[in-house]
Image (cartoon, rainbow over all chains, first blue to last red; front, side, top):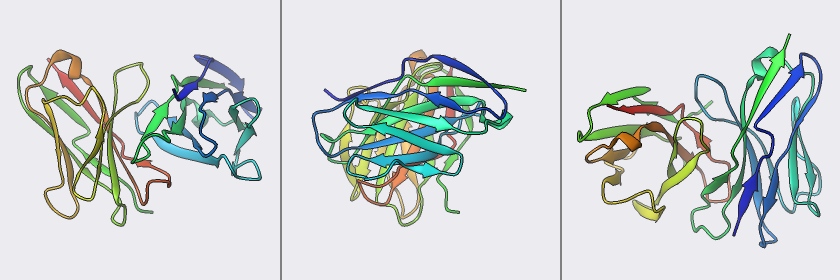
Length: 116
Length: 113
């Protein structure tokens, strides 16, 4: 069965420092997609970054990068130069490859608090 | 930048009442989804919609739930007779094709009293 695991319920980081949010996944399909979303306290779900299983390079989007380690089945999100506005819940998700419409399977989420 | 729009942002209803949650997906997208997030828990898939019909639904999506695309732009989720446990944030999402990124709306917070 496909599964996403986020083992850090909460994380703290000092403003301007980098932080890594962990995500491990389980799938037997060689082709898959991994996503990170940010959910601020206002509740909306904001897409951050995507990594395809066949992508040759780790994904980057501005201050967000993905540390993709296929052999370890991990897709950790790295946020560089943290800002106060980065305080939010972060969800890792995987496209369900058994789904004919590609529904997403989400992890439990990690709450990030950025300290001034 | 195109976005998924959901209304209302917050809906309060009495148990047993019907509610309709509305979504306007991104205009050139073909796949539509509803997800649910009970407070403090992870996001769960409810249903997906493609080519004007339900493509897939979860075990949560029972006979109390229905979805419609009444015109070319709106996508609605109806809960026929709400229960206390339906209280949650409901997200609509859309993607251009199955393999693409799913973009989410800001959600509707449903409170059933």
